[in-house]
Length: 301
Image (cartoon, rainbow, N blue to C red; front, side):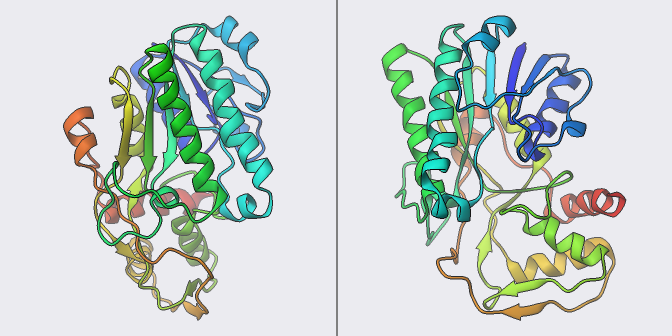
């Protein structure tokens, strides 16, 4: 297929680009390189340096995409709190621009949304139709973007899909990024520095390997539309993650504790049964295996 990947120079996007190229697809990358890295884009995928908050009609007219994987976004929760207008410009206006550019060519949009930031605190693994209680503008902007996809589906009969991702980790993750706790821990181990655990370390997340996430995007092509959780359905505490990172690196060191961060979720996990049933997708890479793969990459960086 002929595909556009917005945010294709980023951690998840570049992994998806590689997976599409292996399939033999024609892939074009759209990225403003504000956080993505040019060197992560495979040579076989043309890179178009563009800002999605500006119209994309001319580019899409040249490329004529059949599917658009929309991963470009403002992803930092703290930035969204400090500058909600900037956050909305990227995540809401940018998504509208992508939807309109895709509509002109009948292209399906597969959108990278978020699980934890949309559901908020979870008493049990969150289901797609459950309460959506964002605690920051980032989650709200992603939820608003999902609603635009759903509106386009009703208005124009399209079949756009939103994937609510768990905490994605793996090779190419930025250790300085907002959601990069795995990369942060492993880079600290590599550099002989102490890692910090905030609070009691019992807060949990659903960590899903980036290669599994790339498969979910590919698996959503041709779906009838809707929202799907993409995670493992398993909770891992920060303390457990730190121990698993030490095991992956074959290291022994202590983390330091710091006061809990205000507003941090204590529990986040995704119910993935809908994706398993309708997309025939499930996470396959165990945490220990994914951490070893990530350690090998971090060690060579």
